Image (cartoon, rainbow, N blue to C red):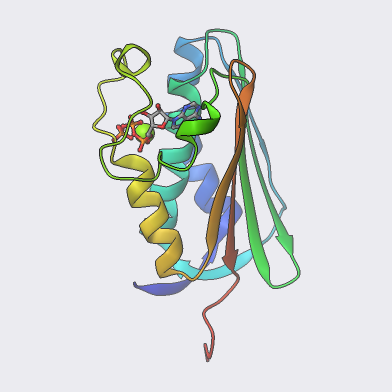
Length: 158
Ligand code: ATP
Ligand code: MG
């Protein structure tokens, strides 16, 4: 990883327009709740990749006119990111498997999104490389919340 000090809200502002375009196509309401200032020592490109993957999933797996909400906050010495959607949800028995490479919940739901099933495997790999954690809370046909926690800086930094 290439650790640098990153201003997280401004990183988010850089990537939001692209996600917004995707959301607009489906009339999905996209909101972002961010602090004015939050510095973290992380691999900037990889953090971007994490956010883009989670947000793209949220938009892809949510019906038209649904909602996607990104929240970022500081919790003591951690960066806490949540991506919540009002989408199709992940069935309980699939929840432990969606971080596996190439795993997709079913073909019918994935048919239109043209992905490969690698997104979340990459996300998890990046989070773990930062010694963080990721989990989801989901209910079929109601929605999903992904929560990511990352140390604000690596151990022994500076
Ligand atoms: P890729 O990200 O490689 O383009 P993908 O989106 O299918 O393809 P992942 O991002 O790894 O792959 O997600 C794996 C599977 O988990 C998806 O196919 C989908 O079934 C399910 N999934 C992921 N995010 C959500 C979500 N927010 N709501 C409902 N299901 C989801
Ligand atoms: Mg994906």
